[in-house]
Length: 397
Image (tube, rainbow, N blue to C red; front, side, top):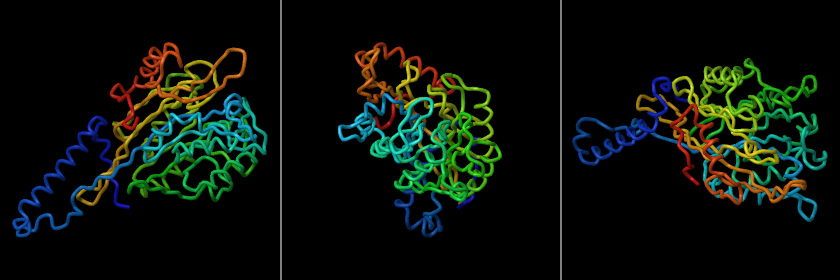
C-alpha cells in the first residue's frame, strides 16, 4: 500500500467536489498537451511515464437503517407453504439499491431461523428469509452487532453466522463463531479502493455473552476499537465503522455519541454509520472534514408506532481515492446525499397491520401517509441540522 497522506485536515468538505473537478481538468489538459506536441515532449523528456498523472478511483455507497422484524412484519411475510417472503416489501427499493457499488443495512434482529422459534419484542428472532430479501434487493454490507445480538443466546448467534457464511459475497461484521474469526484481519476492495469494515454495539441489553466467548457479540470499547483499527489503518484507503449507540427515540446527538465519534475519528475512521435510536438523527463532517458521521439512520423496516419510528434515512456517499503524482494517495468521503424512507402498511386500528411496503418520501402521497409533506420537512430539518449543505435526492433514484 502506498503511503497515505492525510491531507483531509486541510480541505473542507465543500472543497472535495471542486478538488475532484480541478484534478479532472488538469489531467485533461495534460492529455491535450501531450497529443498536440508529442515531438516536443519527447525532446524535453516530459510525460514519459503516464503513471505519474493523478489517478482517480471511486465507488458509491448507499446506507439504510434497521431491519427491525416485529411479529407483524414476519406474520405479513408468511406464505401459504409455511415459509416467508419479504421481497415484496422491498420491491420499491430494489431498483434504487441495486444501482450502487456497495449497499449497507443494519440487521437489528438476529437471524436465528425458524428452527429456534421466531419471536418479537423484546427478545427477537427472525427467519433467514429476511436476509434473502435484503440480498436480493442488492445489499452486500451488513452490520450485525446490535443490542439484540444475544436475544437467542449462543445458538442464535451461531445460526446467524452460519447463514451469512453461506452467502460469501456478503460482507458482515459484529458476530463470529470463534476468537480466531473475530481477530482475522479483513481487507476488502471495490473499484480499486481498499477498505475495512467494523461493527460494534455499546451494549447487549444486559444479556452477557458466555465466559470466554465475547466474539459472539462485538461489544464496543475504545481499547478494542483502537486495536482493531490499528491493524488495518495503513493497509487500506478507507475505514468504515458501524456503531450501535445513542438514545432510543431521540432526534438529537448525545454527548456519548459525540465523544465516541471524535475518538474514532482520531483513530483514522473515515465514515461512521450509526444505529439504535430507531429515529433519524443529524449527519455531519467532524474534525475539519476528516470523518463523515451519520448518527442514526433510524428504522428501515419495522412495525413500531408513530411516524417518527416508521421514517428512516437513506444516505449516499462517494468514496474517492486519488493516487497522487508523487506516489502517495489520499481518500475522501464526498458528495453526501439523502432521502427519507417510510414503512407503509395497512394500519386498521385494533387488528394486525398488513401489506408492509417501503416507499421513498418522494414517492409518497396523502393516501399512503396523510400529511407526508409536513413530516418530510420536519425530518429533513433534523438530518441536515448540523450539515445544511446536505443534498436531498439520491443520484440513482
